[in-house]
Amino acid sequence: MSRRALVMPPRVRATSGGLVAAAEARGLPVLRPDQAEPGHCHYYGGPLVADTLALDLALLEPPDDWLPGLPTEFTARRITAGTLGTTSLTGPTFVKPPSAKHLPPRVYRDQADLTAAATGLPADTPLLLSEVTAFAAEYRLYVLDGEIHTGSRYLTWGNLDPAALAADPESARVLDFARTLLATHAETLPSAVVLDIGLTGPPTDPRRRPAVVEANLAWFTEPYQSDVDRALEVILRAAGPRSGLSPRDSRFVRG
Image (cartoon, rainbow, N blue to C red; front, side, top):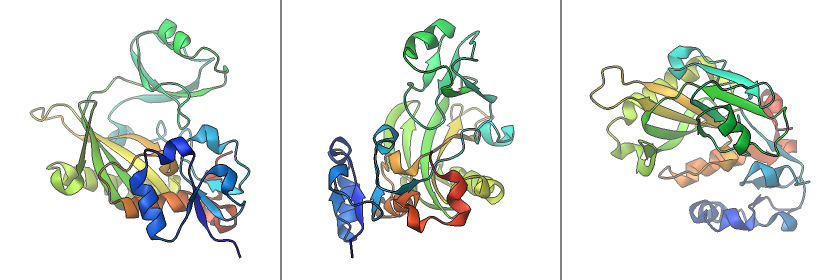
């Protein structure tokens, strides 16, 4: 009987020492894609590599229209879905692909700026377009079965600034907000997923509030200061053998 394993591309493994150690502590060998046996492995790495693998994986991802479908009470900004071929920017707009990172997620000045950055991408490339919003801090929450499993702050004012939730004075507000969101919207997401939550506005601004930044692929997110073993539990569910896929998650399988 084949042992389960965690597959990581070499370049990902080189920067994922914590996850490698956590996997090996569980008895999961960490293998290159060419070393793995179909039907017995999990995956951690990028979607471009994932799409080339023939390992009988079930890779869970949030629906492309999940974020624009949320009420504005959770997003704190207008968000619309479109494609590269149908988008026509008239001013500064934050643009990102819903899941794959084939276009840099950033504020684009105008349509010419977006067109230049998207050279070579097909017209049907899905995009999310959002009002430009400044987030004072951003938090990464690993969610399993509708519950927050672990998490970390990762940015302040757009700069990398990881901190454990226990060390962040705003984390209680962020967690309360995320639990309220999950109470009504957990069924619209995979059972294993990552939520990025931001705080809008400076600390002295009375309008300062939590808002959903995005839902992410658990199998391609950096844990930062999360409990790495608990983050790994979410990753293993989000990218595992197809034979272990639950009926509940079948509609969230990539591809």
